[in-house]
Image (cartoon, rainbow, N blue to C red; front, side):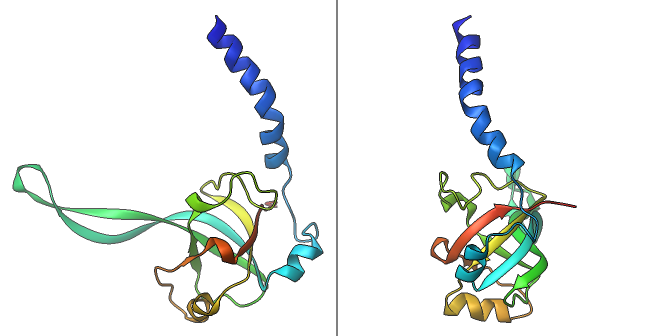
Length: 151
């Protein structure tokens, strides 16, 4: 009985914060000008999972098999400011701050996000190449990640 009461109390206290963050999505016209001026690159992205290269592995009983690793990346949908040549780029989402007002608390697959980036020289070089490398944008380069309104 007390466990149900604890769950209800937890949902009552935490749900408004979660709902307010999820309900506030940004369209192009809603983006703050202060963030646009701080970031050199502003892109509309879709967080997706991709199948990586096939890797041979040894399985139980000495058999040989194959596995495909999964990669998660932000696929570029629209460029609002700056140049990003590769079709997708990686951000280590585990190291993002959880209680930051300009960051999404949890990045979900198949969702659209506005990503604001101030790239360093290495990231600029990667963004100028056509084919992406396994280069992740660091946390220091990210200005903001905001949920996007899908139309």
